[in-house]
Length: 438
Image 1 (cartoon, rainbow, N blue to C red):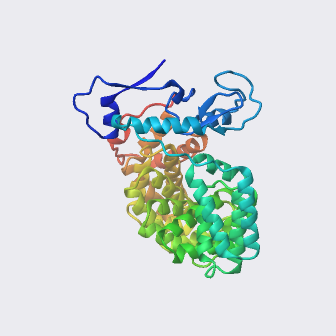
Image 2 (spheres, one colour):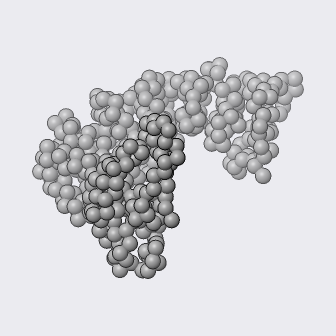
Image 3 (cartoon, rainbow, N blue to C red):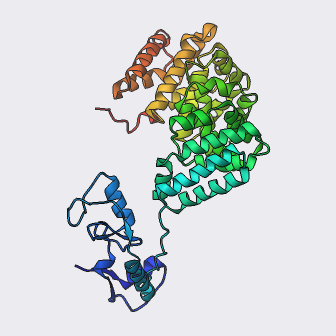
């Protein structure tokens, strides 16, 4: 069997034109193709069975739990992959000879790193951290980053051999010494850690130390966009896996103000989303105190969230509704929400408009405003009816939802029912193209 490419097609892929050559066909030799992918090999390696494959294809095969050679079906005596330099050079020469067909020469592949190499460099990183030698540590971290940038295989190998734990310990050591003096190496370590999430337990403990948290908050306050982004993402990952860090982070002076400013200014979508998640963790977990919620309410976060909800993408909307629902859990948050004329119309509009999660948060927030609204309870109920809340809740029950959402929707409908006479309004566009969940 041969693999043929018509010259015109290859030239088109290469962005070149070769008029009058539509009938010329380029044949790729069979032994240049990987037996698994049937594509031209970029990094040919030979197994113990004697069969050569493209490295990426055979690694995917082996990582899937296979122990045999795909061609011979024999059990492999070892998983060693020996680079076939002779075949790779032949393929490169063939590419050069056929460059007129639009075939680009494959680059010489870099040799993948080994667990031994990673262990050696991690030993050096740990030693430099103990000596607080930031320049030597930075050099090693940059080398790890370079390895990780060469291939996805290298990244997997780096993460699998405990790199995150060693880097997190080093980050804690330099942060304990002095953030200002060691700022360059701290930025480098945090940048490297950002593609190693989720972290293991040891790395979580080191990166969740008081010194490490203070360092990341310092980055949020004083450093450039890249460092802010790396820090807020790290904080989001830490809080998502360890709820006990909520109080630790909340005790750091100025962190609430910084997070609210990120929401207000929206300097970067990634930072905005991560900031909303950090705030969500701070205000929604059982260990969160009313003091934390009150602090965010007093900073005007409720009105900011309502403004974001008016026009925002799905991922931001879900996170913003989660924060809003949590803030409505305190009296001051509900009062601030009720004072904003857009609150109820926006919440009702988000039901069945964004996602199941957004619908759940919206119904929960409306219920809190209606049930615990005090003297304004009737006003909120009437306003909700006027913007079509009852019909939407009925439809939520009809199309299907979670048990908790169903319970809240039913309770809210009972509260709304006495006020229904002559007040109902409905926006039919909300119900187009809806399908039942069964």
